[in-house]
Image (cartoon, rainbow, N blue to C red):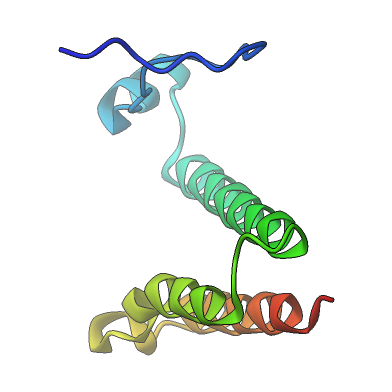
Length: 108
C-alpha cells in the first residue's frame, strides 16, 4: 500500500475520511431534517470549492474553456437524469451550476 500524499505545510488529513451515515446519526443524534440540512451544506461547500478551483486554474491558464464545459457537463449530467430532473431542488441546483459555470466561461 502506497503512503498517503503529504503536501508541504498541509494540515489536512492525509487519509480520506468517509463519514458513516449510521455513525453520524448515532453520534450526534440528528433528526432527518438536520441530517438533510447538513448534507445540503456539505454539497454546497463542495460545489463552491470545485468552482473556485476551476476559476483559479483558468486564471492561471491551466484550464481551457473546453475543459470547463466538460466539467460542467460531468457535474450536471446526474441532475438531468429522469429520476432527478423533476425534483425542484435538483432543478434549482442545476440552474445554479449553469450560472456558476457560465460565469467561469466569461472570466478573463
